Length: 316
Image (cartoon, rainbow, N blue to C red; front, side, top):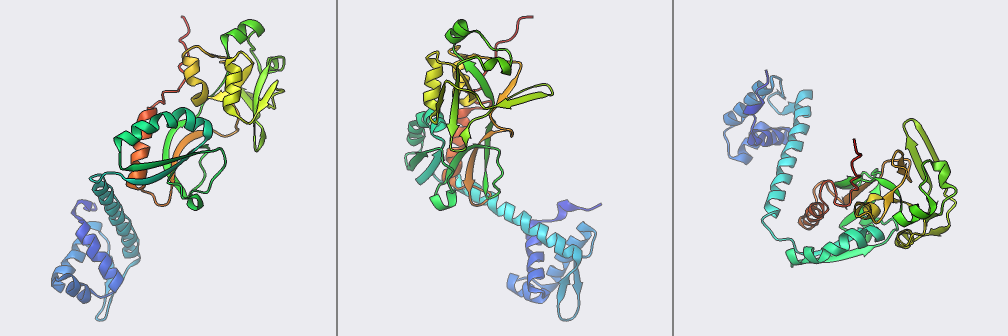
């Protein structure tokens, strides 16, 4: 049985130096060790791993195939330890300097903007730049440190944290339902006053699923706009039925300002599961500033997020 507990970070470092230099005596001199002591380190590694790691001859030492495999693993492990130490060291410092944040306009106004003052007061050395727009940006070219994106994440050049999976709701005001009635199927929607969003990719399609059956269509809307807040205000003014994500309408549903329609159907406007992410470009580990803002926002949003709709329990 392999005795992995006997392997220390120091023995991994020495083994990597031997593989890199190809000369045990030279490594021993560089490290201030006796050649016999270094040989014992290699022997202990081989005994712990139960495999030969080096070929030795009078002129050089060469890693075996197993030695190369373990060398790659040791490098990764030591790098992870170094990254962890960097993160711990950074936590002793105070975040400061500029951090540039980008978010969709509606989400930023509704869920980030109200928290900026608290963030600034908590970290007074932090200079916050919040840019709100609905365009796709290249964070590398734009100099953005932190992005909030609503998407099915596929970009391998970005790392980040999941806020929540997005849920969509078909909604209208209680007054609208009293006046026009409540649709029970997607087909019945066609006779209602619909409010629809049109972005740069065109009119948003509405999708509904119940069990194995699904349907999708482009709503024949009474009001179409590229401004989500305008459509929401129209819905709150009893102007029609809207299909929006929970972060836009969840709190209003919980306050009974809106009611959820067709609750037996799962509604969406994308074929793929959309999620909310806090993303940052570059390496796997974010900077102190970026990590500080991520932790602050995630704590502010909560888990599940405070905007999540909680349907009333059905009476037994």
